[in-house]
Length: 343
Ligand SMILES: NC(=O)C1=CN([C@@H]2O[C@H](COP(=O)(O)OP(=O)(O)OC[C@H]3O[C@@H](n4cnc5c(N)ncnc54)[C@H](OP(=O)(O)O)[C@@H]3O)[C@@H](O)[C@H]2O)C=CC1
Ligand SMILES: O=C(CO)COP(=O)(O)O
Image (cartoon, rainbow, N blue to C red; front, side, top):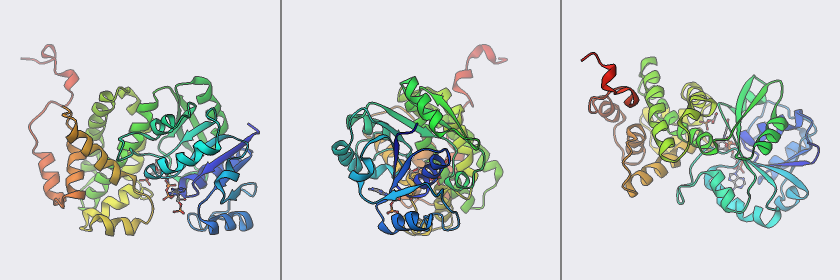
């Protein structure tokens, strides 16, 4: 694609994606609200705030003026935190035509509306939304380590267009029509990454992490199905893939935040220590509020305990003990068919 692409948000992920697009030979500009970031990208090819040691592609330019950055743009990549999206969309409505392709890359659920990012973008009038999500730490994309991701859209042509634009020798892109499943996988795994960090902060072991990831996948599947999406999507990159990467990697801000909580810090202290967006905190609260305000018959025990630890000062050890001693259950509800038992 030779027409202009604008990436909004020059944090870790926006910078990594803009740099990737520049490496792919695209005509890409990045919008940063921080003038110093714009200056150093344009004058020195560095975003010192997020990647002080990595030189950016010299063709990548930055701007501080949103209206200017969106002029003649055909595709916009949004990489700001979920809770900042609604404010941003008010500006986009003024400066963009409704057929502009919007690539949504944030992983979260908006707390007040309980909407996903793509739902908010659609509600703002943009029909051509593609969700890009998967196990993709920005630090590793910046250093060109092999990575795979999913481009999800209802419209196959648009999903394939985005696939072609982003695909490179170190960035493999798959397509998927289950937008909601892909998007919810990316949002929910952050809650579990916080839980995984908490377990590490408590010095629990590899058995614990494996149990957490596996049971979380079960919990996430029920939620995704309840929301009308496909639970098989969670077997893919934006489910299992992202769970594994964030629950095990020290790049994960959600996991690092959880480690601090497990060691006894409170939310503010742990956030301060991480000093970048930790999407899992507000997503946990959004899900908890939703579960408790809608007479919903859905159990999300791990998410509930993460909520209690973060927002009600529950002792994390107590939370884990309660999870361990929950009512005895079968592993797979689907298999609880009496014909399978040797009675
Ligand atoms: N980092 C990663 O590896 C990945 C992150 N993601 C997702 O991408 C999203 C963004 O995360 P990430 O880039 O890592 O976060 P960072 O904290 O690294 O950066 C956030 C960026 O958004 C900017 N920003 C915040 N609010 C606004 C706003 N209202 N208008 C414009 N810019 C704003 C910040 O500006 P400023 O610098 O001025 O504060 C900063 O540039 C999250 O949802 C995350 O889950 C997805 C995949 C990988
Ligand atoms: O989503 C991510 C990697 O896929 C980044 O995770 P964190 O926000 O926890 O750093």
